[in-house]
Image (cartoon, rainbow, N blue to C red; front, top):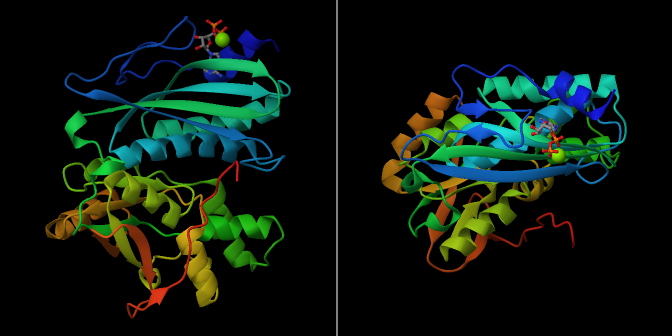
Length: 319
Ligand code: ADP
Ligand code: MG
C-alpha cells in the first residue's frame, strides 16, 4: 500500500453535512469556517510509543486516546470542537493496525460530530500527533489566569484510576481482576468532558484538564492567576479501583495520579447551583474540593482541615 492509498483508505471520509469544513483531506490545505463572532481555539498533543504508551498497545484504544486528549484541551477552554488534523509516523503500513486505529479514532470523532480535515503521513517510529481546532466567543474562554480569591474549586468525575491501572499493567502493583478492568479502561479510554466545558461557559472562571496530576495542574491555574488554594485531600472523588485501596494511596493517586482527563475549575460560591446544573445537564458528576485564597501556594489538608505535607509530583518529560 502506498502513502496516498493509505490516506484514501483509512483517513478520507465523506464530509459531514453539518460541518464547518469547506475542503478536507486531499488538497494542499483544508478550508474550515469559524462561526461568525467566534475565535479559534487550537491545541496539539503528541503520543509517542514507549513514552506515552507501551509497544503493542491496542490500536483502537490508541486512536481513541490520541483524539480524547486533544478534545480534553478544548473542553478545558470551553470550546466547541470543529475539526482536527492528524500527523502520523508509522513503522509500516500494517492494515490490521490502521483499521483498529481508524475505528477508535472515528468512533470518538463521530460522537463529537468532529471531522478529520487533513494531516501528514510518514514512515518512522510510531508517533501520533493531533492538532484540534475549536471555536468559542473569546470572552467566554475558561482561561487558566481567571481564578479569583474566594472561588470554589471543583473537579469533574473521579481521579486516580488511570494511574492505578498504569502501575498494575507495569507490574508495580497487584490489582484484582474486577478492579483492573475499570482502572485500565480509565487509562486507555479517557472520556473528554466536552459537554461540561461548554456548559460551564459564563459560570466557571478558570479551568484546566487534569492530565499530569491534580496538584500539578491546579498549580498552573494558581501561577497564572497569581493566587493560592486550599484543597481537602479527603474530599477528592476517587475512581472505583482507587476507592478500594488504603487511605495513603487514595490521597497520593487522587492528588498526583495523572492521565485522568477530568476538568478542574473554579467558580464563585454564588454559582454553586449553576455548576451543579451544568454538571447534571452534561451527565457528569462534579465535586467541590477546596477554595482559592489570596496567599500564594497550594495547601492540602485532611478532612478535618489539618495540614498534610504532600508535594506535587507532576510528570515532566525532561525531569
Ligand atoms: P502535502 O504534500 O501538500 O503535504 P500530503 O501528500 O502530505 O500533502 O497529503 C495529501 C493530503 O492528504 C493532504 O490533504 C493532507 O492533509 C492529507 N493527509 C495526509 N496524511 C493524512 C492523515 N494521516 N490523515 C488525514 N489526512 C491526511
Ligand atoms: Mg505532507
